[in-house]
Amino acid sequence: MNIAILGQKGIPAVCGGVEKHVEEVATRLVGMGHEVTVFTRKSYSETAGSEYRGVKLRCLPNIATKHLDAISYAAFATITLILNREVQIVHFHGIGPSLLIPLLRIFRPRLPVVATHHSRDYFHGKWGVVARSFLRLGEYCQARFASRLISVSKDNTEFLSKSYHREVTYIPNGAIINQEEDKQEVFDQYEKDDYILIVARLVPVKCIHHAIKAYQKLNTTKKLIIAGDSSYTGEYVDSLMKLGSQSEGVNFIGYQTPEALSYLYQNACFFILASETEGTSIALLEAMSYGCAVLVSDIRANTDVIGNAGVSFKQGDVESLALKMGAMLEDESIVAKCSERSVLRVRTHFDWDDIVTKLDKVYREVAIVHGSKASADRLH
Picture: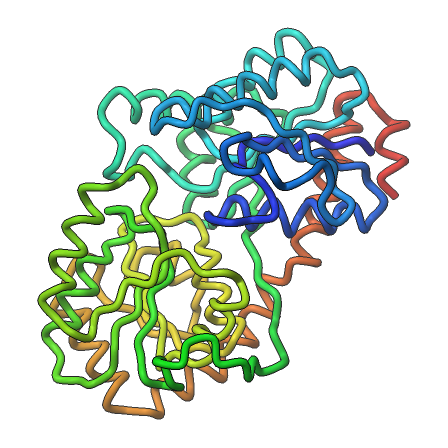
């Protein structure tokens, strides 16, 4: 089946959970025999080439500003799809680009459109009132006009179902179980169990400032390593740098390659995710896949992921976070128990191959509903 995917910045993933999700899904769909085209944004993937692991890449223009980046690229992608009669299923990712779904449905009414809701982006502090309104409208367009709506978290699956009175399919993000130990010392200054790790975009919703404040309450020689870049959030990044400068142990190391992250996950004392809202965090899943103990805020999106394989604290409560960090630093059995359980948790509930099998089923079902039985047959 000929499938087009849009919404992500590009693949191979250089940033963001949506990009990692699309990369893992698209390459596996190709392995199942599908023809997959991923629409990428020029400012992120101009040098990526025309193909990646069997996935066709279609690089489109975008206006690389905070407010016009996603929607400008999505507009070019939608026009392309209106004119391209070979595509049999379109898959939108994210609520911002989904503003264009109604336009596609008007001009290509028989073309099945699947949409994945990754997170309620309008809660993110970097957006103003107008942008949040458009993001809410994008969510409405997903729920109202998509042939099939998918959510990556159980929490948002229930929210969407109740809010928009429609069926929502839960298909989470995933991770790859990494069996081999990375012996390459990517960072000579960071030894095993010598640091606490955060991997996240430097945006307010990730509440990295809470983690820094909690760390500063501890009496520890371990470092706090923060890996990640900003996302149109310069003022917040400046505030983090100022806060972090008050402690010698806080280290901002910026964007890291997958190889570097592999080393960091495997050798961290434990991993922190302090978010106030999430979909299903791929960074959290990847940490768990390496057997890294995790400490997360107690929002449902996080606790649904960790089950009994991690520790949680009261979201937004710096004292609660500091208390749990201290306990994990003092009691090695807590970390050992979480480490042992985390790999099994990912293998059982968040395996990419299982995820793509579920998505393949959705494609077949939506193709049949839209009267394309011949296309559906080709999915087998």
